[in-house]
Length: 139
Image (tube, rainbow, N blue to C red; front, side, top):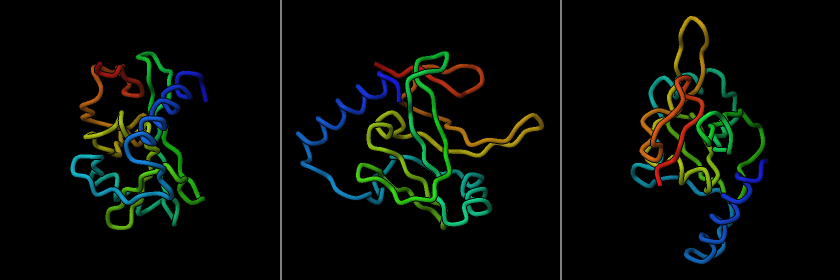
């Protein structure tokens, strides 16, 4: 974890503690507009998930300042994770990353060169690189 990601998570944890108290266990996301799962994303996770969850995180890096990271995991969500579930497809996002994803859509895109999960329509992103892997946040 790089220093920018550590500081982002540290500041976010302090803010959560000050406003909400200590949170324990993964919470089920029901907040409107938090993160949308596209039909193609749900279909792909139903095919390849096999009981695993897809973790999305935002880290410092990439050509625009922040980058998305996607990873299938077997283990249980961490205490600060938020769980999104639709038709058996499960996605977890840590609370610090969720602030940078709120209102975005998780999609699965297929083309001849590659197929991958991607974040689209992120209202927290001011601009992104041409490959869609990194973005600059709105300040």
